[in-house]
Image (cartoon, rainbow, N blue to C red; front, side):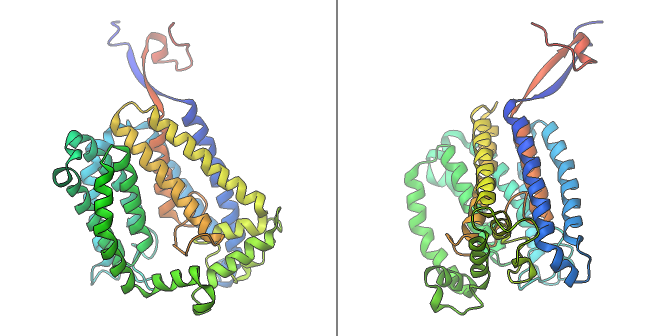
Length: 390
């Protein structure tokens, strides 16, 4: 048999990828335990059974493991070809969410229209991945043109503007700001001139402030943060209760399932303010473990980016890592009162299947970027445990 006929290929996961998989499992375990503790009483009060939110989150973990496994096996370079279709599909879903007449599939929940099928899927989460892949693809494709403002940067700003307008109409200004931050980080990594960023900030800030003034809830949140005593009590209720939870947890916490905020004092303790629940039940030590876990995620992700096989994969790895880590720290910062309320979830941990599945999908892409494509000859084509040739 010829060598060509007796040759196959396989992926070998690098050290960074293996550690990332273990870290993902640790965070998922913390998440499932915390979601159950923070939601069981609320679920009982809803008449759903104490494990209602936990079981729904488990279905998200199962779906996430499927997409993670697929993404970890598919060559990450293929996402280069899928960038435009993925972006177009994400924009289409974002339009459907806010279109008049689509309330049956995109109902208004708590004053906003952000989900499809009654809260089962959030298109803005998919758009985060689309933005990372599309920005990385176009940045590599344009190459030297990125040094020019109109031919280089303008297409990025147009697409970013479309995404931001669509999510702002939901409304979800926090996600719009995340989109801007993600694209900015990838463009900066790709070598876009700093002077272009400064010029754009000068132009964008007045427009952004004008839009913020139209959204009363954003202004109220800012007032609560900078001057808590001057805002209506109801406006800062969540953040106040989160601070009470973290403060009462002390160094080691009240213990699993022993927190008082799960009795309804802290709304959405299993979602937007789940770090507050961790601080109450596991204390400073528990929050520190979570913080360090995302520090490790960042170290692994940026190391994977540095060792990436192609410029496209490097930019994708930077975008994914920055998205996950920044989202985590913004969530924690809100829960301990360092930032105004944003509504961003804690990756892998907060209740919410859309964010969970997309985050696991992105982690699968990172694992693939951390892998090497090996040529397997002879016995190793059928026996993956056979030693590599010297």
